[in-house]
Image (cartoon, rainbow, N blue to C red; front, side, top):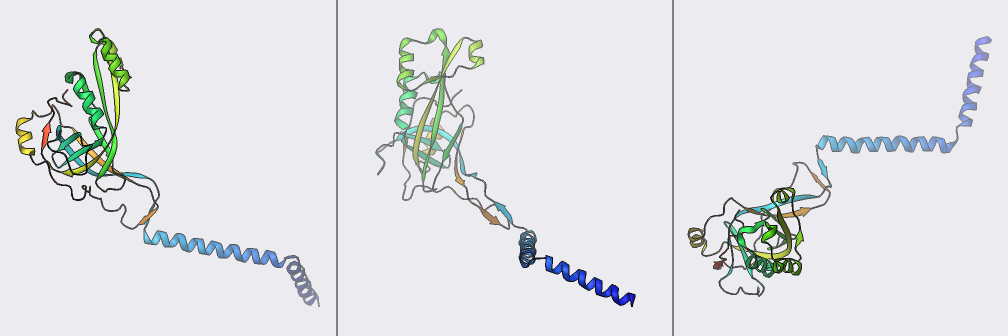
Length: 252
């Protein structure tokens, strides 16, 4: 009789507890369990596939070339009326269509031995379609007592900014920096490269020019980064002769 009464009490307690649990609570618990299960499956799937997920921007270097000389086209280039300066490389030639006039103006009006050009020329190739853009930077330094009034006027007219370093100050020198925005097109190796190399004195140290593009997108890759792209030359561009400038642009 006592055992039977205890069994009835347990049934009543269970019935009361079930009444207190609302259908909404039961439904919420079921949904939460389902979400946990699906999340676990997705995580497991990614781990099993060993995929790499990337969404950070990166610079991809398309090409590097050693600079041989600087000059201008021997003849006018088709569809390039503003081609005033050429960076002659061992692999290709790089025609400046914007900023070339400004660079030539600086280099022909300043004493070459006092010019220093940034030896890291990096140009951006937005679409890898044969066109590039960037900046060419140079500085001009002399002893303070060697500067003339006309020098300072030239600096003002050409956006020169004083950038005297501590080492310059120790020898009582003064330095001015120039930054010229440039745009250009990538052409094949110049036709008279061998002649230029034989007649043009080698630069005091190797200077490189590099071209890069940017990628910023979410990628899922099993094997890591995509295979490297190659630098594209200007479509239908033909090789041409170059007349080198009489100054040594990068000589130290």
